[in-house]
Image (cartoon, rainbow, N blue to C red; front, side, top):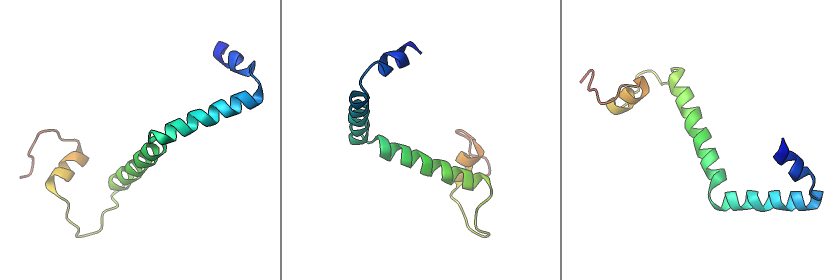
Length: 77
């Protein structure tokens, strides 16, 4: 809260320009791409968990192990 009060003491234009500069710096470092990529990964994983596979489609064994959360095991091979 103390930090929020310090920020609020600044001029609104100064605060907006600072926020814009910070957002542009994060975008230049790939922040937006990272967030979009993470969201896409999340959507794919939720689809896999919900049984969204096409009937008869085969998955690679390592993918099945990863989805089941098995680490280092060769179960089923």
